[in-house]
Length: 416
Image (cartoon, rainbow, N blue to C red; front, side, top):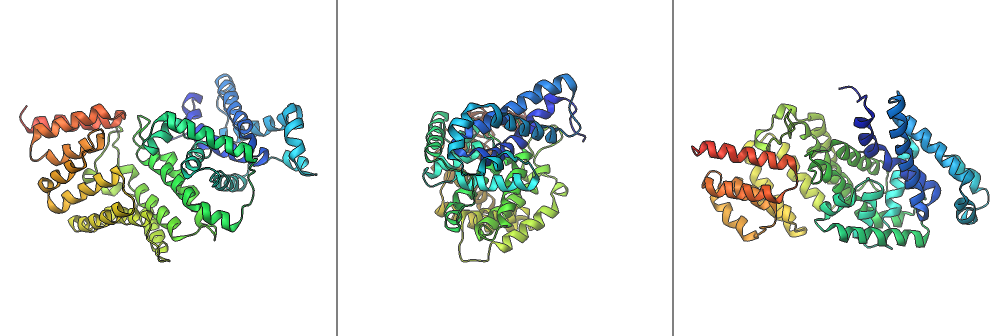
């Protein structure tokens, strides 16, 4: 497919892809104390694009056009805005002012700035939740709603976390800089968690009508790859996370049909699976064994490996065993529900139903989806009832369509 010619189609995609990169480079110049200035320049750049492209059409190289405008706006800021003279200049070292003007947006500088920024934002002066929230917003461009969904919490809670975290950064005048080996190692867990949540939002979006947002998955993989290229961050956990991302990404094309509808795992066209990504997943999973630690990423990567393996029903006992280990290390509702699904593949749906009902997660659409699946071959009326409850609880248009289609299938099967 060619590039969209309409600025209305192209700008939202470019905003998601380039806004965070642009902000990272600008923050490297302004310092995180003045992050709002960097964000304002990036926002103004996209506003100008919206106005200019509507009148003159989309330029041949829209991304390059955006960075040129951002560079010019930054020069204007340094030249004309009095805030720079009164607040930023006194804090700069002699000779640093001229260096700050030399703003570049090369691929290497963008990559270095993003990586440096995520480690700077993940500062222990903020609690881990605040660090991750801030990194998702600043580096990954997440909305408050997207962050709230990632943490399974309320938007107001996230707003307060973000406000406190930003205030702490401003007060301590953090700058994006080279940080020490000790700082990198102490912050790596938070960085990996941020990339994990970024990938998950792309793999199964809870906020958009799109089930899959491939650009988020690609961005998470790109940043994880950067970590494996640095000796300090090329750890077993990093490789395990990257392996997980590769395995999951290999099935992206098969997870929806041409209408954008969800295709369940059992019905996926395996010829659409990306074998090269599976091989990369195997490579990074092997690299992840170069140590004694077993992290949640190792276990999830192992589960994803067995899902892509061509072993038929023989894989499910392995998957169930991995879920049993995972739930002991880090319990979550999703892990518990996924474990029950694997349990059903090994011991049958009838035995899995009481296990699922013990969880009593009646406010979760995934809980009702699972029970709908488990009852589908045993009691169609109960299955339909659970699917209807799942429809009422989910905000995803795609999920609603998929579940409604399954209800129709069951009713036809039942002769109604």
